[in-house]
Amino acid sequence: MRFFHLINLEHVFLYIFPTIVFIVVFWVFLRFSHFHNKDSEERMRKIENRFPEELADREAPFPLGMTLTILGTVLWVLSYILWHGLMEIQI
Image (tube, rainbow, N blue to C red; front, top):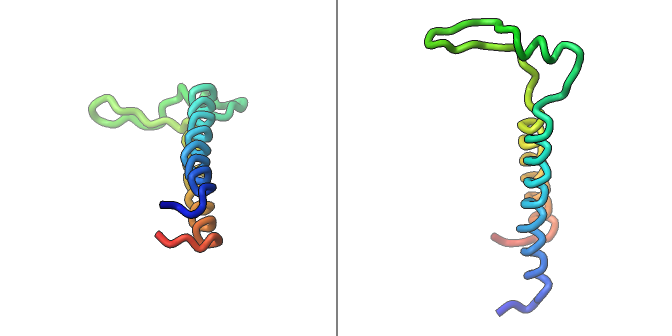
């Protein structure tokens, strides 16, 4: 039995908010693979090193989706820790 009914609403927001953020980040990841600048096309095509078994190394730009995913995960973890610390929630 819960004494405060608003905690159910809080849990719903804690489930829905990261899901919506993930959907937006995933859409951005599919829409834009990386930041485009004047030499990005050349960097995607130019092979820097060749390795055995037909592997190739390029100096391609770091994908935007990966950057946003890593940044979002770090921000979510920090805010989750701070939220639980400030609300004095015992796990």
